[in-house]
Amino acid sequence: PTRFTAGGTISYVVNITNKSNVDWGTVDVRFTSPSGFVYESSSPNGRASDKIVEASLPALSSGASQTFTVSGRLVGEEG
Image (cartoon, rainbow, N blue to C red; front, side, top):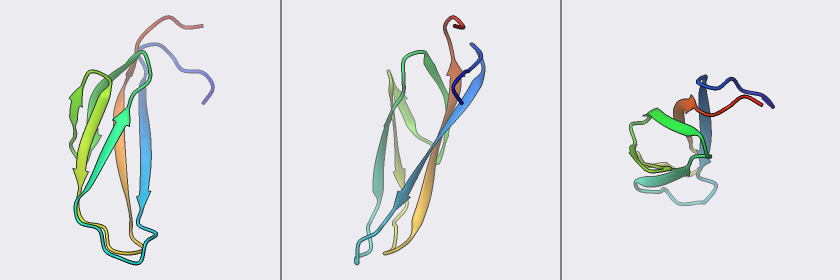
């Protein structure tokens, strides 16, 4: 969306796909949130510090995909 309401909830969905020919072990994901974003949760559970949310995803076999979702609120003035 091009417009959000201050205090409203927003979710970012990151899709991770293993396009290689080998299986991956644990996959570490790092999400940098935009200004005005207040972290509330993530799936799978992540660790939030300042504007960074990090999580470890289970192993991904070749050709498999998984999502990492970060949810929070937007704070600031509407404009």
